[in-house]
Length: 263
Length: 246
Ligand SMILES: Nc1ncnc2c1ncn2[C@@H]1O[C@H](COP(=O)(O)OP(=O)(O)OP(=O)(O)O)[C@@H](O)[C@H]1O
Ligand SMILES: [Mg+2]
Image (cartoon, rainbow over all chains, first blue to last red; front, side):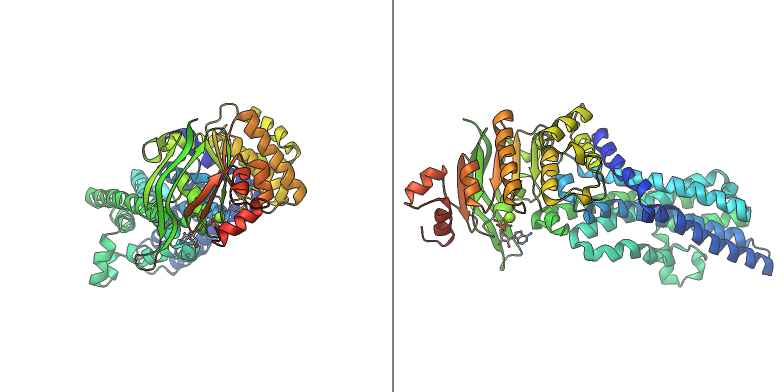
């Protein structure tokens, strides 16, 4: 791994942001809009005063953490698609860039985007709804890291699929996250799912974060074990997805698809 | 003379067994250091596939590829640092400015003094005034020169050019050829060159290699082949080989 090559790939993407309105919208506008909608909904629910549970906190917490996962996956995929859309993949891979450097650069870009969005969303949530992301205390940090990791894993997975199956698989880039959502128990507890689906829920690292968040709101504490499982799952999936990515890249080179993908 | 590229029993089959296409069929060839070698053949002959295998973008079915006497598997970084590629079918990102694109590739190759390098090459290809422009706004001829600039950023010892002049008007094509000859002479860069324009090949190439259906058909200097087959020019030789007349 050479740091200067990763840096080159990152700087190149950063050139794009200041001059691209859609890209800036993607980073700021949509997440903020979504936060507003859900924020006002939770304020309304709060007013209805359904029961003693802090509904606003649960919804807003769920939403912010969900966006984190969603955006983390998206950022990785979009960073890669930029090269596909611009027919630049071949140029990149005739340089000595290694696959792992390429992946690292997209992941890092994802991180920059996420941190920016996280700060902005957190600030707005606090400003408008007096929602404090850090009410979960130090747990916020493992929550965030676990979701970022899982987002990258999903992102890398989608990139591998697009590499292999071409740009028609792009729908996946924007759709896969919604396959994960119902099972991650984002807005409702795992217990609300049918038993079979509960098993699915528990193999997703994200589920433990959303469950954990609700546990904290309800009880003020978080058992350690679920977070350990969440991270362990992430590590397993990260290894698997990198293996999958390399395997797909080998297939792509065998089938000569790098050139075709661009077209 | 040492070989910059040597291909040994190179085979590439696409597709699943049963209905496979043999794009490159037991190809053996050498490209000598410092020469411009033309890789010729009709559409579908296997030229692009061969170039992509040399660049490690396509994995051969069997056979060996040595570049600078090294194999890609163990020396990928070392090789690719000294190789570059240009073709109109691979564009630079259109949503970046020209200088941003060039700086990016200079960084990827770890060029020490990026600004000097880009300016030097920009002067050489007369694109200095294009540097602040958006890549999307360039004409095809301008883009070709920018692509060539990109291809020289890492001071390559080997340049692979896949139909670099295919979409250029005769004037710009001629200028591009002159530039290529100049960099070949001044910098001693070895080039493997594909084109369907035989006049251009005669003007540019020290040697030509004819392939058809993935197989090597003949090789030599243009004049050697013309007199060997008793034809008027290289174009006639091409037609004869493409139509399996010789
Ligand atoms: N990725 C691929 N999958 C399947 N077949 C392929 C692939 N790439 C090339 N081929 C086939 O391999 C053969 C050689 O193609 P190639 O592109 O190397 O030819 P070429 O000599 O560059 O032709 P042209 O002059 O048209 O550029 C053709 O029959 C082509 O259809
Ligand atoms: Mg071709």
